[in-house]
Amino acid sequence: MGRRFAGPESPAGPIVAVTATGTAGRTWQDRRLALLHRETGRVASAKNPYRWRAPTTPRATGGDGVVRIALPDGRCVAAGDEGVDAVLSEVLGALVTLVDTPPPDAVLERSRPEEVLAAGVAVPVPVDEGRLGAAAPPGGFVDFAPVHLVTTATLRRIGAELPSGVVDLVRYRPNLLLDTAGPGFEGNDWPGRELRIGADVVLRVVAATPRCAVPTLAHGRLPRDPEALRVPARLNRVVPLDGLAPQPCVGAYAQVVRAGLVRAGDPVRLA
Image (tube, rainbow, N blue to C red; front, side):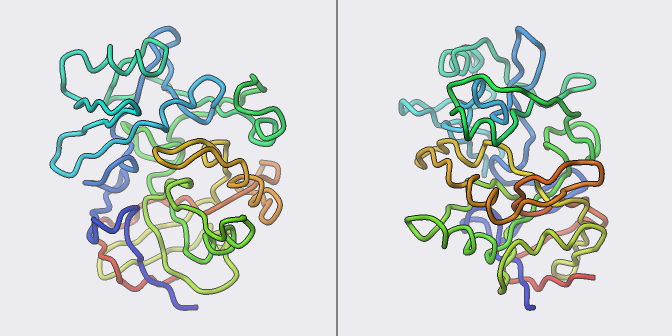
């Protein structure tokens, strides 16, 4: 099956640097900044949407090296602005601090996704805890591994089940989009194998990506859509890692074996 690198999350960026800690020079998928809840000392994550679904509605950009955050009410603040923490705390309804370093032994709260589907995002459901960036170098805010891959075939497969016929890539928040043919959900078979992208980059796939409630939430201009999780839950419930129960999965997590640049249209080879 032919594969190529289709590009990062926006066609505005046809070249992206892949480093040991993830992709560099992009927007939200860099995971270089996060919000720290002052009351609990934990990183705010929309994986617990009852508590933290609001952080998916602002949109961050950082193409010139300065991270700017566009708020739902039309205001815009920069990460280095005096008073940025007060503005973000007002928007989120909780006291938060914008940080670039994770707290020691940072954990991630993840609501059980199918219970969120059943109860809705406004109802508290059981939460599981896991270590932030368990398969990544220290110092970043990735959920698990430095790189998250999704394929166009998988997006087409999910979109075909939706009333609109399409699903927006942004809902699944990948670092890299691979253009593939076929039935979709290729990432199920990739753990333990290496992907070579272009002339430079080598990735080692470590797990299929289990989906939480985040794809169902409003993302900037995108409204809430529970079907973005219900469809994978129906079509692709697999075991992402040994020792875990089957979960709805979309995409794959990877570690960086060799860093470098990738360009839109680069061939992708599965070793």
